[in-house]
Amino acid sequence: MENKMKALVTGGAGFIGSNVVKYLLNKKWEVRVIDNLSTGYKCNLDEMNVDFIEGDICNAEITMEACKAIDVVFHLAASVGRQKSLENPIRDSNINLLGTVNVLEGMRKHAVKRIVYSSSAAIFGELITPSIDESHPQNADSPYGVSKLAAEKMILAYSGIYDITGICLRYFNIYGVNQRYDTYGNVIPIFTNCIYSHKPMTIYGDGEQTRDFINVKDIARANYLAAITNKGTDVYNLGSGSSITINKLANMMQAISKINVEIKYAPIRPADVKHCKAQINKIRNGFGFEPLVGLDEGLSEYTDWFEKNCMK
Ligand SMILES: NC(=O)c1ccc[n+]([C@@H]2O[C@H](COP(=O)([O-])OP(=O)(O)OC[C@H]3O[C@@H](n4cnc5c(N)ncnc54)[C@H](O)[C@@H]3O)[C@@H](O)[C@H]2O)c1
Image (cartoon, rainbow, N blue to C red; front, side):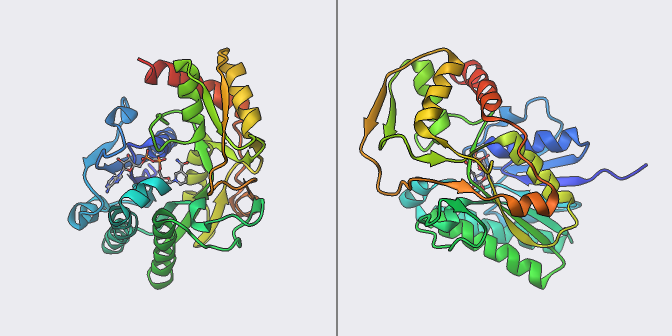
């Protein structure tokens, strides 16, 4: 009988990580998770057969042990977001950069040959073209952007020195099941929360700015494809490759939930760019990734999930 592939998913109890775990289990992989539950939820892994380590990737010993007998590391554990990193830049760098070094050292010790890293479009800083390919200048303008970029560079360096293949996926805006509303949240959970609480939605600027939204199921599949591709170490932008205005998104969400709320307009925020869309030719040609979940379908599933799980 063929040996099962064994994955370590760091941050596997989080929004994206739990979707990656689910995808891998469906593919009959064995999965170990390391997560300190700082922003993740154990219930995201309910009824999933995983070897769960409640631990911190800043702890070198535990992280090293977690890498034992693993074929592929999916590295998602991080302190996530610009605002959080401004509030606590030291914590951000400790987790996002030094935590990544702990993971790489664990891989080196236990001869784990592949890492799929959840990077971020935040590494680019201010966006200067509306459609962003991998060669867009990397001028990260927050501690978060810098720590995600530094971790990417560290993975590329380890891949050059040791027998490790590093695939870095730079995510744009992600939404989907297991994404909870919080004060640092993204626009889709914020709007969904407004809808189900019957509160006004606030749109910054005229609402004609565009954004690229990709469903977390597509992200999970991209992680899997990155783990099985025969391509070598590289970086890939990962979004849906299409975009929608915030006005259209707000209308679409109200139509899907069949609840209308007031829309308020507030002054545009300084860091907001007008248009943002990932160019996904490289990942498409590289390992045949194609986004499959349409925004309509993804939002329907998400709003249902949100109403059932977040509005109790
Ligand atoms: N959500 C997005 O739109 C988005 C966009 C770009 C990149 N990303 C990246 O994707 C990854 C996952 O993000 P998410 O949105 O699922 O966030 P999340 O906060 O839901 O998941 C992060 C997980 O990591 C865990 N974690 C945090 N610090 C840890 C530590 N020190 N040790 C062990 N576990 C720790 C948390 O408990 C949580 O389960 C992150 O690396 C993030 O930078 C997310």
